[in-house]
Image 1: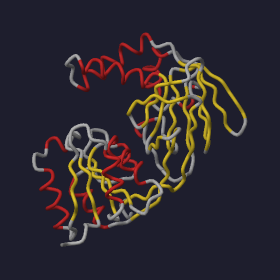
Image 2 (image 1 turned 90 degrees about the vertical axis):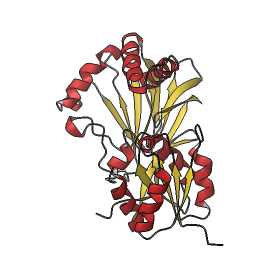
Image 3 (image 1 turned 60 degrees about the vertical axis):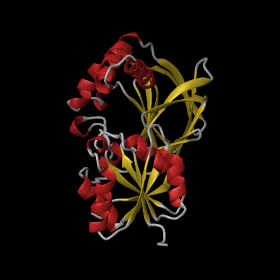
Image 4 (image 1 turned 135 degrees about the vertical axis):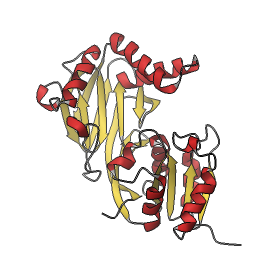
Length: 300
C-alpha cells in the first residue's frame, strides 16, 4: 500500500472554471504527475463544506489545495489556520480575489506549477467571533444584497442578473446601520450604509481598487461611509474609479489589530464573511491573526 500523497486537493466541482472541466479530476492528476507529484484528489459533492475534508487531509498532507473560488479557499484556509499544513490555491472561481492578491497565476497550469515548486509564506487572516476570513467581512448593505439575490435565484434568476437586480432594489430602500466601534478603549459611533473590514489594507482608488499589496501587516482596516446614504454609493464608486474616493471625505478608515463592533437594537446581525452571510451575536469581535496561515505562493 502506497503512503498518502503529500498534496491533497479539495475540488469544488461547481466553481466557475471547474464547471467547464468535465474531467477536472483527471486533468489535475495529469498536471501534477507531469510536475513530479502524486496527489490525493477529493471532489466535493453538491453542498459539501470543504472544511472537514481539509482538516482530515491536513493530518497527512503537507499541502492542502483549495480548487475553487474564494468561498472554497476561505473554508479550506479556516481549517488550516495554525496547522502544519500549507494552503495551495487553484483559482477556479469567478473572482479569485485571494489568488490575485498573492499573484498566483489564474491559469490552471501556472497555478499547478506554483504549488509544485512549494515556496511557502506566512500570511495573516482575520477573525470575527469564531469565523476566519482571508479577504474581508462586512455588515450593512452587502448582506442585505446577498439575501435579496438568493431570493431572486430561488425564483429562477441566474446568479449575476439576480445580483444586479438585488443591488438596484436594495440601494434605493436600505436605510443604513448604526454602529459603535471600540478600538484600544476608544469608542466612536456612526450611521453608515456599510462597515467593511479588510484583512490588511485595500486600495480604494483607481484601477487597483479592491486589491491588496500586502497580506502580512498584521492589521485589519475598517471602511465606512457615514456621510452617505445607500443610494449615493454608485457616485462613491465613480469617485473611486477616477482616484478621488480617499480625498472625497466620504470614507472613515480605521486601522486596528483588534476591535469590537456593536449595533443598535439587534443582538443577532447578518454578517458577510468572505462573501458568505451568517448570523452572529453582537458585539462582533474582530481580530487580526498575524502569520497564522501558511500559503504556497510564487517565489518571486
